[in-house]
Amino acid sequence: MGPEKNEERIPLLERGEEYVHRLEEKAGSSISACYQCERCTNACPVSHFMDIKPHHVIRYVQLGWQEKLMASSTIWVCLSCEMCSTYCPNQVAVAQVMIRLRNEAAKSGIRPQERILAAFHKTFLNELKRFGRVNEVWLMASLNLRPEVAVEKIRTGSWKYDLDAAVTLWRRGRLKLLPHRCRDMEEIREISRIKGEQE
Ligand code: SF4
Ligand code: SF4
Image 1 (tube, rainbow, N blue to C red):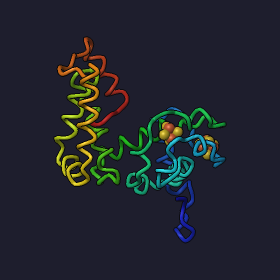
Image 2 (image 1 turned 120 degrees about the vertical axis):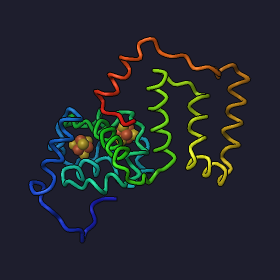
Image 3 (image 1 turned 45 degrees about the vertical axis):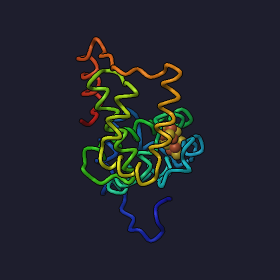
Image 4 (image 1 turned 90 degrees about the vertical axis):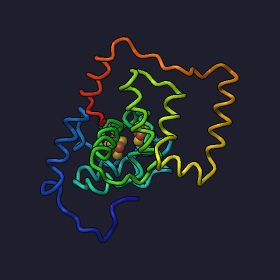
């Protein structure tokens, strides 16, 4: 999905400049340098699940279309695999932009379009802050206890697949019941603070 034809076009310098500079600072790379070659989108393994393709995300940032980005599925679907950044001929840190947008959306209180993925993102970060590493049993228990996730899993019946996977992993000795706390928790919290991850 790209910018719609009849949508009001507001010049970059009137609306997007401040937003671009803020995100450029956070992402640590130029966003203005993007010339819409689409290599990032072509390299992205999950672009077909996104409502705004990676090259359009960069364009939207340039235009200052923050609300549309916050409400998109793209920021939650992104895997942070860095393929887009690797293939960009202008060193635009597309993957970092995605992370910053996702964090902004999580803090904004805007209802995420991908509620389950957003819940997973929050739960994952919370577990990381608690233990400094992720224990699969505790992660899945915390995730499935979230009301929005529990309701969805019961509605779709997907809890059965989770259960099957858990039993298989358990039989193969791949699940550890008790989480182990990382030794240097303060360092983990510091990294989290520097990266501006949400609670
Ligand atoms: S690959 Fe880089 S220059 Fe090309 S569209 Fe993506 S961000 Fe822009
Ligand atoms: S980091 Fe995100 S946007 Fe970039 S290629 Fe990977 S999944 Fe696609």
